[in-house]
Structures are given as structure tokens and as C-alpha cells.
Length: 170
Image 1 (cartoon, helix red, strand yellow):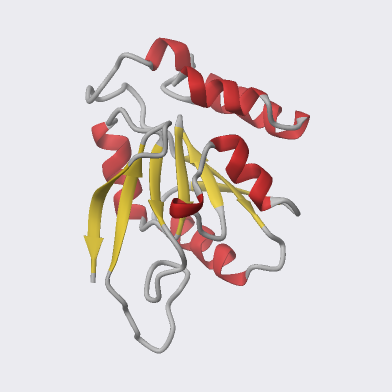
Image 2 (spheres, rainbow, N blue to C red; image 1 turned 60 degrees about the horizontal axis):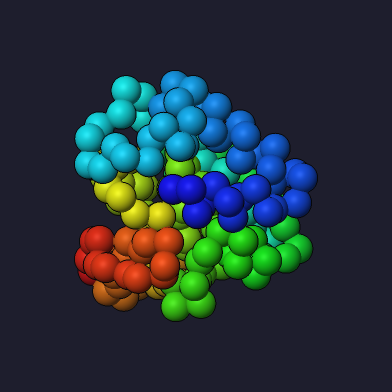
């Protein structure tokens, strides 16, 4: 978790402020450094605030944010012109990349990840950097179109960029 914190601290001042808010609110005020060894143990409070970094011109990102709100999350949308820079600072590899990047608790969410997968991630608290739905899978939250649903995989990934299947969707 220290690597993620170091990456966050290199972000521009606006993102640093966000990181500090997340650190203070994650797990009832418990610092990320204190949470580093928790493994799969549940935490006292499950974070519900999701900060979404997205392009102001991307409509599917807004639809994903709406999906998260409808699923009970408090969503703070941050319009960014340099999404590649956000992904690079947070350690999202090109293989995991999608159109938007979000943070919930100390986890990174990349792309059109279903809220149910985020809830499962937060309940299990695995030792991963985050989860991602690479690309823009048709039928994923925010990418609904004419009832078409293509099968896709949500991956968990570590700070080194190693990915492991987390959930399958069809």
C-alpha cells in the first residue's frame, strides 16, 4: 500500500487533497499505512465514497457513475483533461486501462466495473491495488446498448501490474 500512497502523493495538488480526504475517511480515519497488513480481514466501516476521474466528454463514464450512485455509493466526479497521466500516477497499466479511473477506500477501480464487484472487493479486502474491466466491454455498466452484452472479465491487479481474474460476466 505504500507504493500506492507514494504514487498518490506525486499527483497534482488537487489530487493530493483528494488522497488526504480518502486516507482520513477510509476505515473510520485509519491511515493507509495502518491498513497495509490487514489482508483479507474485514474493516470496521466500508467506504462508500467513490471518486471518479473522467473526461468531461465521455458519456459512458457518466452512466457508470450513475450506476454506482444507484447501487448506494456516493460519487464525486472529477473532470480531467489528462486521463493518461492519472492512470500512470496510480499505476494502471495499459493492459488494464479503460476510459475512467476511480478510487474507493484504498483501491483503484478502472473502467466499467459493476458495483457488485466493487462491493465484493470492499467486503473481502484482498491485498490488491484494485480491480479493472479493461477496454469498454459492451453491456457492462455504462456501456449498455440495445440489450447487447458481450462476455468480459474483471481483473484484480497488484502494484506491479500483475492481473488475476476477479469476476466473469456474460
